[in-house]
Every structure is written in C-alpha cells, then in structure tokens.
Image (tube, rainbow, N blue to C red; front, side, top):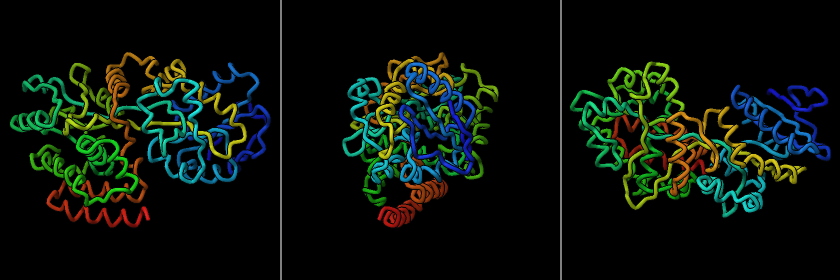
Length: 412
C-alpha cells in the first residue's frame, strides 16, 4: 500500500494504517486516487479546503487501487477515517447494508444538492437515503465516424428502427456497423447495459444487479432478443473475442467499422491514431422502448462518511465543499472528466461538452457499468455469458439458465 499525507507530522510505515486516535480538528481521508491525474486533483482539493478551513488539519492516506479494495472493509470496521472515496450505485450497497457508511441527506438538503447534483440522485440513493457526494463521472454512448455516415447518407439514429436501418446501410457498403473487442469481456457488458436500460429502464436494471430478478425473466429475454437482432444482422466485428478494446479501435480508424459503444476514454486513442474531430462524433444510445426514460451509463466516483468516523462535523463541511460548482470544475479539469454539478463549467472539448449536456439533462437515472453494478462473481459470469452469446446467440436460453444458477448462489 502507498500512503501520502498532507501536514503529516510523522512518517507512517507502509504496512500500518493511521492511528485511530483522531486529533480535534483533524480530518482523516482515505482514497485510492494514486494515478497522476487523480492524485493531483485531490492534492488541489485538499489544499483548497484547508485554505478555507484553517482550523482543520487534513491527513490524507493514499492507497494504490488493489491495496484499497482489500483494505476498505477492514478500515471502515476497525480503524475508520472520516472520509473515504468509493463508487455510486450498487458498488456502495454492501457498505450501506453493513452499516459502514453514514447517510448524508442533511448535507444534500442544506446545500441544495438535489437540484445541483440532480443527475446523480438515483445512483446515490438506497432505501430512501443518500449515502455520499459524487464528484466526477464520464459518459458512455456511441462514438461514430461522422464522415462515413455522411458518405453513406446516414443520419444519426435516435430510435431502434433507425439504428438497425443505419447498420443495414453500412453493411451493404461493406462496412461493419459496430466494432468491439470482447477478449477481456467487459465491453460486452456495456452493450448489455445499454440495451437493457433502453428495453426495461433503470429501476429494472438495478433490480437485476441486486439479484432481485431472475435471469430467465421475460424482460431479460426481451433485452437479449433485441441484442440478438443486431447479432443476427451482422452488426458486430467478426472475431471480436480475439481483440482487446484497444485493438478493436483499428477497424474504426481504418474506416472498416463505423461505430463503437464505448466510454469517453476511447476518444484520446482515436485522436492519437489519426482521426480528426471532423471525422469523429458521438451520439446517445437510441431509444428502444419509447415509454422508458433514457438512463445513461456513467461510472461515478464518490466520497462517503464512514459510520465510525470520529470527525463527522468537518467531514460534512468537506462534502459540501466538494459539491460546489467551482470545486467540481477544477477537479474535472485535472481529471479530464465531467463534473456532476450542473452549474460547473466544462472544458471546450466537444466530447466532454456532449457528455455533460446528455448526463446533466437525463431523467432516467445513471447506471455505473455492469462490473460495478453486480457482485464480482455475478459480473464475471454475466460477461462470460455475453461474450458467448455474441458468438453463439442460439445458446441464449442455456446461457440465461446458467446465469440464474449463479444468481441463486451469489445472492443467497
């Protein structure tokens, strides 16, 4: 594990957690933001908070990602900091259910956050209470070759019929409609998420993630059958199971494929590979069921007050500070991602602008991504099943029956 501290008065052994005896006016924060950009963003965040609150000394314990995942339950239980970073949606559910996170509805009420952070209310709420403050997310959606669409006379599709028609026209021209690499499985999870969100909506999608719905339910089958329409129509890159997500960028760069259902982190490598912003565009995943509000996929990073925190008063001050529009603006400039506060400013990058507009106006909820919204064993089995389904869609019923057996074991 790696630790860094601001205003730290004594070096800490790398194998030892900070002492549980918090000083008066000391605010202890544990995070796993050890990559360069997140680390820089948190350094600035903490310095800004301390400048406004000179009576508070922040002690920041910085972990590497894997060390944090293996340590978080232990330190929340036995040696709790005052604040800890984590993720929204079902990823925070185990800690909420275990009584290890503190509800922070008062912070939201006193600072008008249900309005300014409106897009994230659903993903931060469990059992009618709000459990933290989100500070950054990034959009998923459909990235596409604008120039190819223009050459083929294809308008950006907004509904399922238009989407399928666009794919058919691309196929006729010898262009693969959607590139994808499922070698490492998770990309197929993103496609499932969007088709399920558009077929059944956010509440059903989250209930499935909580294990409350059978995988053999007719509504899940409706999602899979919608996906099967695309598979049967040859929408996806051949031999996709042999490609990583990065390797699957090449057909799009070369003009052999026209779309990618992907997160905004794909933009940088596409630009680096030579695509200009005149060639590359973004659109919202199309409507399937017009009666379902449009939910989006936007993995969201959050800060929480542990139930066993010793300085909850200053922790709440920090959350209120973190939620402010100008603070989220600065954090996300450093991260290259999107602020959640609707009054924040976003950089000039056109894809960040498009994502911010889409996410800030969504009324259907924010999902976190398949491998965040499901327990690890269920997520692994699900994504393996999706990859198999994309290769052998005729196995759909057998795959769903297998996933149902995993559900019965994982959630019991």
